[in-house]
Image 1 (cartoon, rainbow, N blue to C red):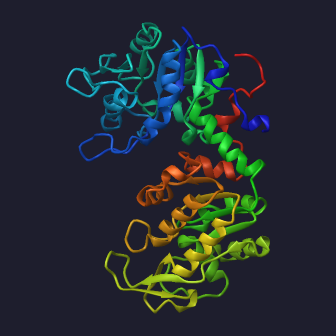
Image 2: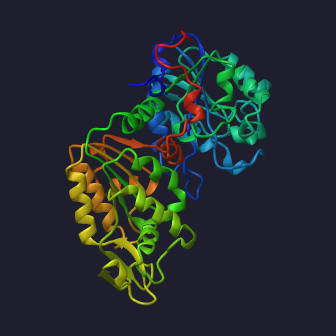
Image 3: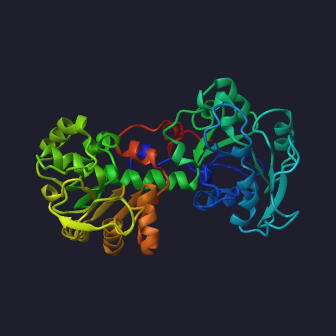
Length: 427
């Protein structure tokens, strides 16, 4: 594995007794009541946190949350995360007095919880004297959760002074937030200028798995791209065309390619200003780009609407193509069945509304049934896996979103590039 995809991790450096700053991605969805709605990102970070705590590190966790634009926004505090984190880490946190819930305004009295006897403290800031005192007071195995990094404009501006303030809290920097690795922010790249910098286990897994797609994919390599717009994924398509044996296109973006071939899809979503781009990509694909041969059309994009399965040029007047048809789903599934490597990002239809989720569900099941090394990313694609009950059969589910796509465009992600390569200087 090339060194750029083989980073030093927390296992390669001494951690006992050291204050370790871990950049995590705790930007989780909340319920209307302000509670964590999905713990996936917390669970993904847990192995790194638990490893450090169990090996005697003094763990400092930091994340962004929402887009407060450099100002304190009460609804964007990390208190809801602090409340459930001890439970995610395996402890008994969650009851009154035992949860890490928000407490006093200011200071580090936000609350305490325990996870496998590793206390978790939440502090309602991420820099300043009270944070410094909380970090200095940490004992081996204890965990400190800082508040939203984006409350400070220096975070997104990658201000060296802000990065230095954060770095002063610790002896070692760990990036385990692959979902933010494409951002050159103070906590994702800037801190690496001041501290030894290594990867957490989630970061390592993401970089290795996605690196396999770029460097040494088992053949045939089949990629499936969906979603609404071609414009969102031009760079990914261009790079993948140089790597894959077959590229399958579905979702709204397929409409633009079909329109570029001369099909009239009536009211269907088509990016008229990208038709020439689509023709260029089709020519560059030299037959490797596969489009839908049938679509599910409807007069309205709502549950219970009348639908018809038609060829791409058979969409009725006033109707819209909202999913790939059954013949296309079968063809895509057949391509996946014979693959050695599969990558999927983006739904193949209006996944949120039945029955326009059938194409995505069929592909999810096909990938899970295949013997291929499989990587799936994107919220709707992952939702299709979970709805189909097959998420456990995928080789790697990427938490990256935009970071995954930029990685597969062949871009160097700043939050990855700043980490020490395996075999590099000792940390």
